[in-house]
Length: 237
Image (cartoon, rainbow, N blue to C red; front, top):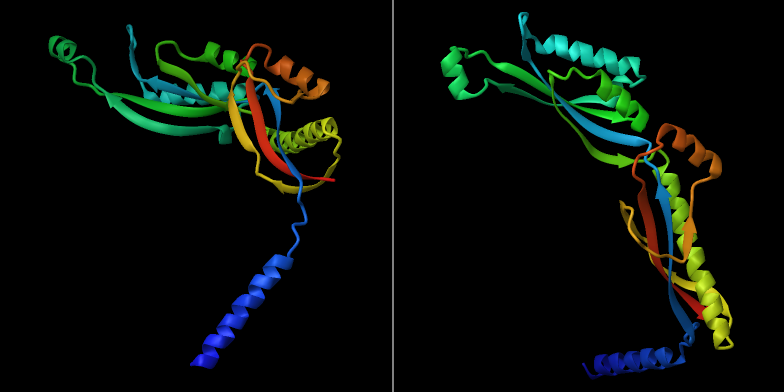
């Protein structure tokens, strides 16, 4: 048993001695944050449209099948693909109870809600103009995005890290040091939001050609802001 204790003690002392001999490869470091942002004009707009059967004066009830067919034909005529339209819900409505009792009508009015993906405000306006005013119960925009969002994310993450390095360089120069290798890089934090008064180290915009193309399709749709913040530790030398 004494031999076991002695072996354990010698092992502990060896580890302690080894730890004392380990040299910190980065005795001097600088920790900085970098950020990059971009104003994005959406080219993907998700909207919901609710359509309901109605009584046409002198013509009886306009069925939900007729309303659906007209809506889908109008969407197709505007270049909206079938895959861009999905059914969100079906519903039924039998009117105000007092009016039902007075008019002795118990007929159910069916309704359907579509979710539709639209490419821009121009296409959205054209679709709204083609909607049946009597059948349309609601039209609302759910969310917006951009078809190149993943490419924008990658571009901004890289820009945020580069902005952090630029900041580290001029801060290090202020104390007579120079920046060496990157010790740690945290995953950039994403902020995606409507336009706010925000500041960043680096402001990026879409290419002139891409912006011009989107301005034709989306001349008046509200821009969103995509922003990344990152923390990077650099060695000083």
